[in-house]
Image 1 (tube, rainbow, N blue to C red):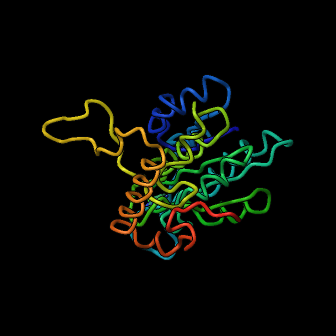
Image 2: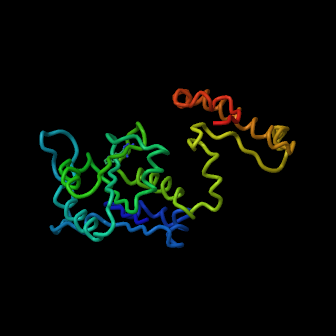
Image 3: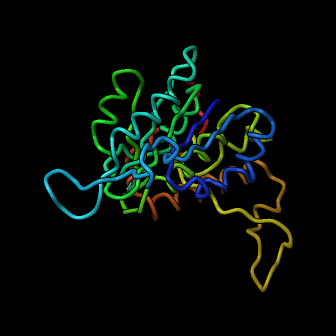
Length: 244
Ligand SMILES: N#Cc1c(-c2ccc3cc[nH]c3c2)n[nH]c1N
């Protein structure tokens, strides 16, 4: 997979050199390139914003600068279709299912806005040539798209084949395929500051451990995310294996 990120704060994306995403880059599983939007400005002040039509506070990012940048980047490979991902508070809500869909794309280009956002004609023009998705990582306000790009890139990269050592670990986790929150986890010592690991986890009885974990996942999901419970398959709720 190739990922390009366009931003006026390239250093904001420095964490993508580390850990899981850094390893994916080093191993060649991920070709990630970060671009400074100001490289496409043409004035001596390297201006990327201007006042909003219709008035109002703040500034809007200029279409001509973004257009030049996206033309260069998305036009650089004809054999691979680019998918433009634009973090936006007005975007479709990002979730694990969207992460899985994006992980199937061969090429993602992130356009990270700042100020009051990117001139809407940039996305309208891009839609003439490439797939465009405006995506939000949640119902709160950030100062720009870079933090969202970090979140989305990490969630997508870890789903790429070969990135996570044990693919099984992708299954049993919060918001994984069973739609439940993850059960509590423990490691040595068996007792710590007077707090003991639940006995069942020390029993070696795999079926009981599995049942306990599912019960915990159901309990936590019901307590913390009743909205996810509403979406569950009723047959899956009791955790019994059934012949299909
Ligand atoms: N994704 C996302 C966002 C944003 C966001 C994204 C881009 C810009 C550009 C200027 N301000 C922004 C806020 N706020 N909250 C979210 N969940």
